[in-house]
Length: 419
Image: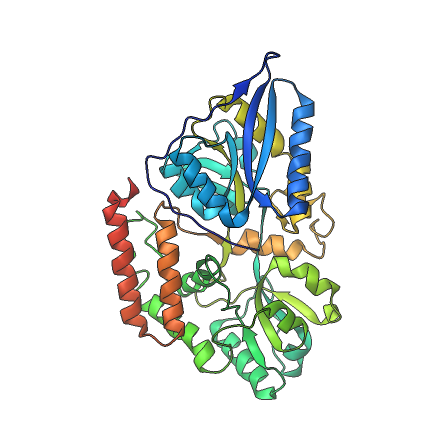
């Protein structure tokens, strides 16, 4: 599951043309990041074909971009006032793109959107700007035999490992000498993985990336006692020899090949795990409670309406059609992700209540934390990534966190706190 972000500057609103032909059919351009993702693109294409066949007033036309160049294409289109009427957007980007004037509120969809997981709804200034078909959940993917051999309690959604239990479990597994990696947190990953995967541990300690009361400062939450405790804990996973400083090229295969006892992974790894030769020995456990409850990242790709669309009623008409449960089911099934509505989940084998993947949906419902809802998030994300990497490599926690706060606060202030 690739994760990406892009920051933009305010003032990029567009005047998007929606053309109408001699028959009165208005064509709406739609952009997606799914070029190269054949299964998901096919599912999206089916939604569009169904919509186009259901009426003749509007026709949606898809243009798919490679994910690596998608955000750049959107920001360039905004600058040239040529954004499409409908586009997908990575969840953490929604506040930035809404603030910059790229997106329009999804007016008239509140009741429909209320049926979706909160983590898949992109908000800014208390308005809904985007909604997604699916989410993913972070888990501790563990070898059952490794836990049982050391007498380690199997945690549940209602009783996660505490900080002390997790420490004792790592020590016990390491003491067996059987595993090359007691724990693998996938530290070789890059980009948005770092704030998505590791800031929930900071939040579980009681810290955060920024004070969410007013989104003006990170002082006290990113450099307070809880944050320093998180930093020392994160560093200790490596300095105590439980976790590699940098993961191997394929941590998932390292786990399936018996090198790793516990893998911090996303629900997207379940399909390969279930198909592996050790499927019966794999547990998908909740994340660790480090004092303030287990936390996991929330929010994936979502769909939005371009603010400059000259036929916004058509774009919203498509959005209402596209967010039916049956399409939540078909798109999430194609992408191997968690269906974002109860109705959609009931239609996807394994995600129905009691199904083999239902636990991921329960984790998402109970533990997901969206990343800070501020247009300054892209800067916060890159700052946190550098900070966490420096700490893992031995930098002084307090001094490094203080510098991160200074940088984040300066960015917020230089943008008038994105008011």
